[in-house]
Image (cartoon, rainbow, N blue to C red; front, side, top):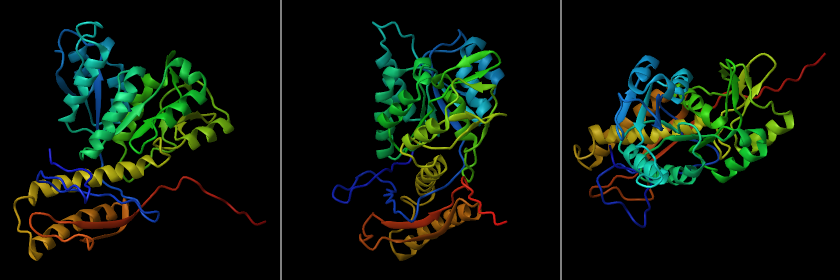
Length: 353
């Protein structure tokens, strides 16, 4: 995997790589590329699977054959949501002594570090692991790996939206999505933690120039219908809310816990990932750091951004050498700017009669 991440001009990294420093301005936000892989650490599985092993699952039959039909609800939800594939890691058996829950998940996080994916979600409720997962997401971002974490809560949590909103505040971050409402479908209830894999699949399977706001969810009802006031409070807290509009269940608004749009954050993650990979594949160690080589790199990155512009992901991309730093030796400093394209989510009508 290409080395990258956040760089500090007072402590420059030493490993070869293209280091991106995203400076967010009020007038622009960064957007880019379509994604589709959901990562899940699986708690239980049949005898056909081996502990501490990765499996790539593309359909329900494959999941049943590999893990057994009773163990794949989270995988099914992720696929139903729209994930192209599910990257499954089989957790070791947790007995509390030889293998503790903390140790099992710590090992899983480390294993996932070396695998590419776009959205991470747990296999049901793991309240004691949320702090560790939150720190893990932030560490990966600092090291140049970008993905979203989708979390949820228990039945008791879902009964009181204030509890879910507190979880959003606790894990406030651009890379975290917090579902606070469970669902009922086919006579079965699933709390928000158990239904979070569907949301993860929905996010992963939605094109990067589209929003999940008002996306219809194929269930009969939500576990708790929130009032208008409760919905507004939840959105202000950065919570992801499912609502029943009288006919269907839908996502009220696609938000991360920082209050920003999922569409915007996924695009930023794609820009960081794609530009780094492109540079590693075709440029790092392969071209001279002189005006011609720098121009080639700038041209390639701008061409990538212009393709995103054509797809209505961003507008007005500009790529230049960063005037704040001198691009000499083995280091090149680029300044990238553009405006994001958001979805229309609020329509205000003035009707004159």
